[in-house]
Image (cartoon, rainbow, N blue to C red; front, side):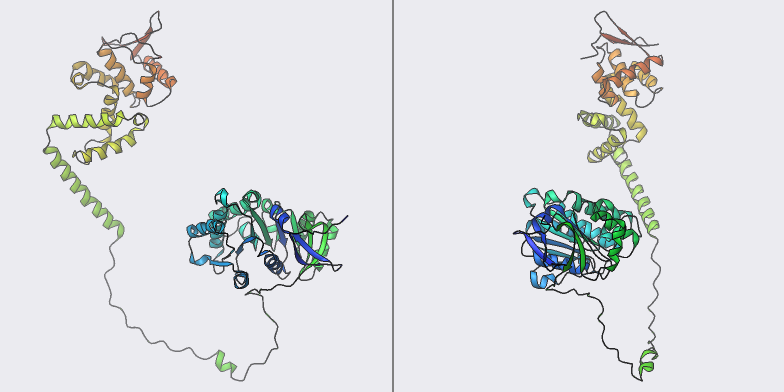
Length: 497
């Protein structure tokens, strides 16, 4: 059986132990994703650079680069380098979307940022790529170096907000990115530190040198090897990887990564001949520090006032001004005219179909704004008075009826029940005093502030249990309500109207 990868989309990564070319199938890679693992110095970044150089002319690329290793790709292949330190998260999210719209390869350079900011800004950039409209779902090779930083298996020293955002973005990339054209290539030094749900979505693996037992054990499990074979990962030389996956090889195969064209800015220290220091090294290293000239002290300034005190004083002044203005406005108005205007404003609020179901506190704020517009002052009515006036307005009673002794008695009865029940009681009283038909359930429900007619019926039962009203039905099923202790009774009415 032929275990090698070949075809028009095959990229040469290097060579196998037998001298034949080691290839990776790019179309298959875009569909199945890749995980690269190797300790520091194993050649992991060299492998990623080889893969990106070989595919740079064939597919769009996005690189999440925490150390600035891959910015040199821009010199040869024209990648746009975005320094994340110079941009906000909102700008990076927009950049992630625009790079897909304009099909530009990008290196997101996170060098110089602390871990918390690296996670947040990488998450914003990946989020922009993920949320692009369907018309721009072109294939993109998304390479994430040091993936354990962006998809940690456990909480670390970074904030929970940064960890959730970054882990969510990485999970979207590896789990849901394929349908959006995003092919994740993630590289990590420690498999044990990489979130399992992120690593498990890769179908192709390139495992390099590693020393810790837990990492070797996970690598062997991913490659389908026996535990005793995992010891061989300790002996892998730099640049050699065990490959497995539909885009690489059907069976584990050892490959050596080929040469690259571009170089990393942080390739590591290079051993050069050491020359002993000169005789003057003592004077150079331990020379006394220059004496700083004394600075002229700045003239002292009075301490700034306490901000809370300033705000409190401003608030008191504003409150006094508002009180004076309200008093002046009240004095200029006729009391009867003022009462009429307040009632009109209440009816305006309740005329809106949805306002009948808003809580009294929200209606009170709306009422105060309308009072100011109408020139009635900022404190036209306190909250307690507003609730009473609102209950009266909900009942639909006319201005003439409000001045009658019967209505005064009805308000006295309503004062003995909770505030939410007062509009219901006054609505029934208005119909009973005026010898009108009994209000149907839907009307009572609206006055009660609900869409549920069942709650309206329960409100009537509650009032009846308190010996305030009596409900009865005639032979046709029509309901009438009489008030106990008062000579008021509604005419029969259909409760389902």
